[in-house]
Length: 394
Ligand SMILES: *Cc1c(COP(=O)(O)O)cnc(C)c1O
Image (cartoon, rainbow, N blue to C red; front, side, top):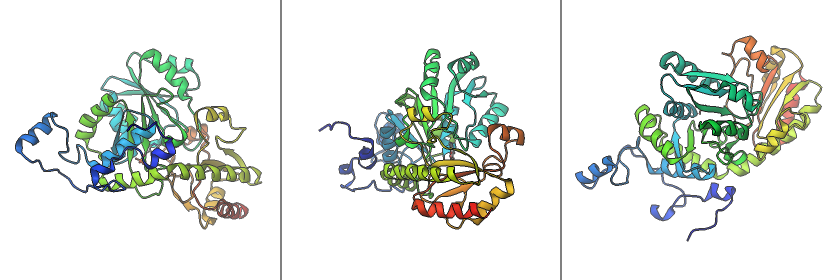
C-alpha cells in the first residue's frame, strides 16, 4: 500500500530499497560482479535492444548502485539519480551532456577548483566558452546570458569564503530563458538544502563529503529529470565510464542513513565553535553563514535548513602564524576535504587554492592568514580545547 510521504530523516534510513526482492536482506547486498548472465541469447538481445529491463554489464547498471541512485533521487526530490566514481566524474558528465562545441556556460564565481579546471580545459580543447560571474542580481545574470548559453551552473555556499548564491533568483532568470540550472549541493547535502524544490533542474554532489561522511570513499551523485539522467547514463557515463563500484555505493547507502543526525551535530558543533572563535583575541575575522553579521545571513536562513559545518577564519598574523596554529594541533587533522567525522583544518592559500594567482586569491578573500575548518562530530569541548591551544601558542 502506498504510504503518505515520510519525512526526509526517515527516508534516509528506509526509503526506496525493496527488501523482499533481495531475500529480505535488511541492507542492500553488494553485487560485486562485472557482468550478468542471460538465460538465453534472445534475452541478451532483448536487453541490449532495450525491450526488456534487466542488468547486462556493471558499467551499464548494477543493483547495489541502483539502490543508491534511487535513494538519492528520492532524497533530493528528483525523478532519477545516477552515481559516479568521483564528484568530478559527476560534474564532467553533466557538463558534457549539456553542451557541445560553440556553446557557452554561465558559472557562479568561486566554484570548486577542479570544476574551474574542467571549464578551462573544455574551452581550450573543445571550444566551449564560459563566464564566471558574481551572481548577485537578476540584472547581472541576465546581462551575461548569451545566445549560445546552454546552462547556468552554480555552487552555494562556496569554499572557503562561504559566499552564497540565491538559487531562487537564478532559477527566476533561467526560467525566462528556458535554461537549465545546475547546482553543486556538496556543502549542504540534501538535508540542508533542496535545490530542486527551489526550481533547479539538476543537482549534483561530491558524495565524498557529507553524504559518505566517514572519509572513506570518493564518489559523485547527480539527480534530475529522467530524460536528462537517461541521456547521461547512455552517453557521457557509458562512454566515458566514470562509474561507481558496488562496494562504494554500499558505503554511501550506509552513510546516508545517518546523514540527518550527523548534519545536526556538524551544524551544532560549528555554531558553538563560532561563538568561541568570535571572542578569541587572535582571530581577525570569521566567515560563517550562521553569523548574524555575515553579509548573506538572511539568504542562508532563507535557503538552508541550517548553516553547515564549515567555518573559515583569519588569524591575526602571517602565513607562518596560520601554519603554526595548524602545527600545534593534536587532535584536529591537517587535511583538505570536508564532511568527515574527524575535524579537519586546511590552509586554502597553500592547499585548495594554491593554483589561483595571488592577486585573484586575495581579491576573493583567500588571504595567507585564512584557515578553513571542517567541523567534525567529536565533543565540541575537545575540538575547542585543541583549537584554543593552537591559537594560544601564537
Ligand atoms: C570535493 C568537491 C568536488 C569534487 O568532488 P570529488 O569527489 O573530490 O571528485 C566538487 N564540488 C565541491 C563543492 C567539492 O567540495
